[in-house]
Amino acid sequence: MPFMGMRVMAVDGFIVDLPDTPENERAFGRPGSGRAPGAFPQARVVSLCEAGTHILWRSLIKPCSRGEIPMAHALSRFLQENMLLLWDRGFLSYRLVGAIQLQRAHLLARVKTGLIFHPIRQLKDGSYLAKLYPSDSCRRQDKQGILVRIIEYTFDDPGRPGSGEKHRLLTTLLSASDHPAKRLIVLYHERWEEEITIDEVKTHQRERPVLRSQTPAGVVQEIYGLLLGHYVIRKLMCDAADLAGCAPRELSFVNTLKIVRCRLPEVPRNATSAKRWHECLLEEVSQERLEPRRNRINPRVIKRKMSYWRKKRPKDRLYPQPRKTFRKSIVMLN
Image 1: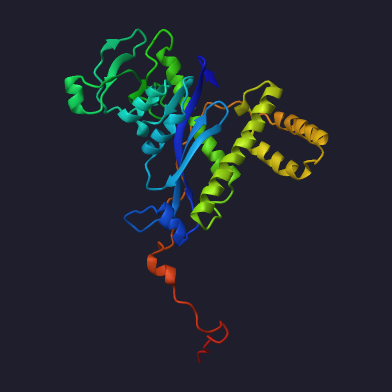
Image 2: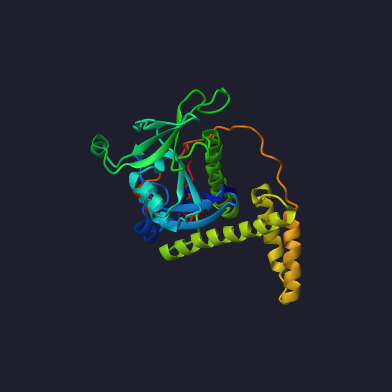
């Protein structure tokens, strides 16, 4: 989904549970809490996603202790001049904004309302120009500031989360006439397309809660396999969408995945037959149209947060094992 000639990209991350082996724990680490160490070692994946096609364009795989902001900074080197990057409020850093500008890309990001921005010039659409500084001392001395545009807004619909609260966007698109504030507010919510993309990988494509690989090398290989498999499905959907004359995200990822899994064993070895097979596959996928999205909101909640069972502790890993068979251990009581 291009915007004013720019490719709309989003950056976000997700966690993957790994098999509980000493090798995976040493390489990727294990999350902890006040109760006990986490149940499984975990790897963190951060990806640049093209919002219009759901293609995970570039990804990094790191230990779970690695923060998303440093990983996003590493991914920023792949940004191109014709890209507009969207991110959630937790990603903002002066260094990362500077890296994006260095790539001559643009940014549209949600930022926390507590950050200080002094208006330099009020724009006709209600937004204003301000500067982003690396520190408070630089702000006081007006040094090393990056010129940005701030858009503040709220909602007047009681049924919409955040209604009545102040929301704030930061962008490097400085012209109110070329990029009106309301248009950018609507565009920013395309960031949720990456959340849908992550769900495609973690819920529908992967199918199991924990990966299979027992070693760190195998974990990296398996995650890249999932990402490459997702790319293949999404590329197929892009081609099918061109055939159907619709946007790629108007087709069903779940149904496409089912079709591919059914049709792959039928791939002919003959090149001419394989080409015809591919054309039939595109035709079948192009018919899997989704219903238009409804104007609705659902809370991000789960039914059961904690388990009734006791939390697994280190002592449970060396649990005493029986010395007798079940039958021999039976003692009859009078």
